[in-house]
Amino acid sequence: MKKYAYWGLCLVSIVFIGAAIGKAQSVALLEKDIFSFFNMAYDTTNYSVRILARLLIGLEVGLGLALLMPYARKKVFIPATFLVTLGFTFYLFILLFRGVTEECGCFGSWIKMTTEMSIAKNVVIMGVLAWAYKIYEMKDDKNFNWVPAVSWILSLLVFIVILPMKQLPVISPNSGKVDIVTSGPFPGVQWENETLADDAIVAFFSVSCDHCKEVATAMTEQLDQLPPIYMAMSGDETLMEQFWAETGLDVPYVFVDDEVFFTFIGELPPRVYKIEKGKIAFYKDAEELNALEEFLKSK
Image (cartoon, rainbow, N blue to C red; front, side, top):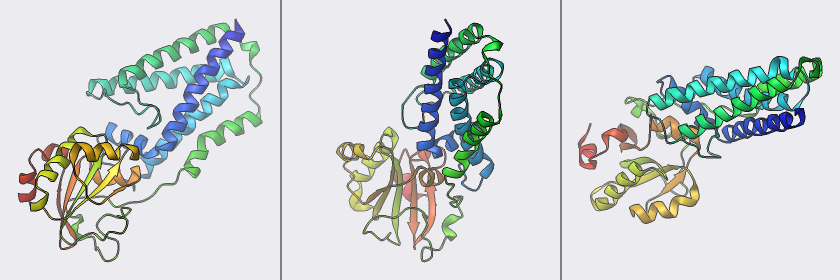
């Protein structure tokens, strides 16, 4: 039975390490989820949240590796993994209570899972861990000496080092004071072979966002009445052709890093900025963009 219990722990280890890899590939998504959970705007200067995101990734890797090794498995790491999974499950239930059901972010952008699917996954993981804990005996554990201890601590901390933390400005209605000559109103966003016009519209769209497509379609319908439009995109670049086909908005665009995108969008995309005389005059978020005419008249 211990052989099967070990195989079960191997599967749990794969899930934990795979989830960590997915989050590490798009760590800004995890940062965004943490900021949103605490009802905070995405802020690249808030290093406590950004370090917490990296520690969570390291924790998943560390627990995944520890389950594969015979050191303090029953005494420490099976219970610790169970409690961490239980904590993640409580977090998911809070998301469910808040109405967040479409994407839990458990595997970053690597594997898409709904909140309900992730809760079910966690229940299975906790079942496997409880079963393995029952099968294993204390005498099966080897002493937790300094070699695995150092390895585990390094796995916990290494992501703080290898995942860089870009610092970008906090965007507010007064951010129009940014000097376009020195940095432009959108640091980190550069349209290839294009210079941002002094009077323009800059739209931050997710390539798979339905509301973004609705706003983009409205822009297409009024294209001859609008100043030059530039798009800063997020998501799967292979879906851009579909975005064009559905919206007809063929204007300069660039795909930007998640950190840059989240800095400029607020809570959810789309966010559309009005540029006047080379400065950010104002912007409107997703819930305020139902009528493009109202946006253009806004101040």
